[in-house]
Amino acid sequence: MTLTASYEFCRRLNARHGRSYYLATLLLPAWKRPHVHALYGFARYADEIVDSFTMTGDRARALEDLTVRVSGALAGGAPADAAAGDPVIPAFTQTVRSFGIDHGDVTAFLRSMRADLTVTRYSTYDDLLEYMEGSAAVIGTMMLPVLEPLPGLAGKAREPARQLGLAFQLTNFLRDVAEDLERGRVYLPVEDLDKFGVEPADLGRDAPTPALRELLAFETRRAREHYARAEEGIDMLTPSSRPCLRAAVALYGGILDRIEAARYDVLGGRAAVPRRRRAAIFVRHLLAASAADRAERRVTVEVP
Image (tube, helix red, strand yellow):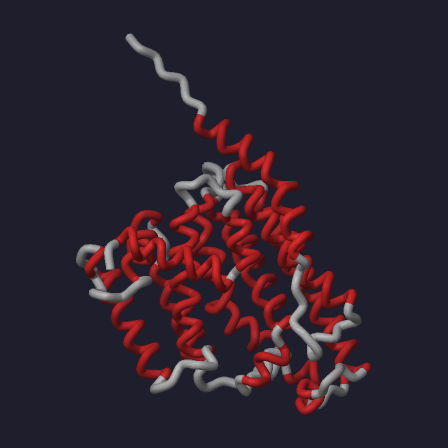
């Protein structure tokens, strides 16, 4: 597995499994895209170990093996051969090294993946936030160096990046209630279920009860609060990264719009932004992305 092949593998993972997110990445300058794909590819690769319906064998052992390989690759050795035959780690390692990504974020992510092997319920939203810190918030902070905060704003941009990761994750949880239940997991906090009078069995019905609709409306408002807290971070990035982020927010926020339009029926089918709507969002941001990319490429060369 060459480094080039590893980046291409990650790109294909992104294109296949994260269609909305992949569409948004096409608005980035070409040189940034492989690094975003590498981070997505690594996260998806680990997520498949704990979430895949088709994987057989010892998931805990497979995740531990991945952790050992990643740790070894980050500790030293050439990125392309740090984990011989592994399709994701060479690209992921190269990106982490190139941008000085915090290894602690990688450790936190893998810790949350291990939690998915044993934890099926979260008592409070604070408990869920602790899980999402590793599963989502650190994805935002790992992406941040690639997206290039403006000079002097890297520290200030970190919190909005965290909030955007949380917003995306909570959106996924609301969309995937039925799918997660098939895996034996419930990401809606127990205290919220109790507050609205929702029984776990209600999540397995063909249609939501009135109480479940109220709960999902509450959680949707909570997700939108995370999006609102993330908003200020977009203008802290270099202009060529902003259209991608704005498109991603519109696409993922569009999932919440679809959930609301369906009166919070997330049990009868997966909420998705229609293809025509996704294309319109992409086109709306394409002109700004092209202009920003050209402006950043513009240089003046003085010949003595």
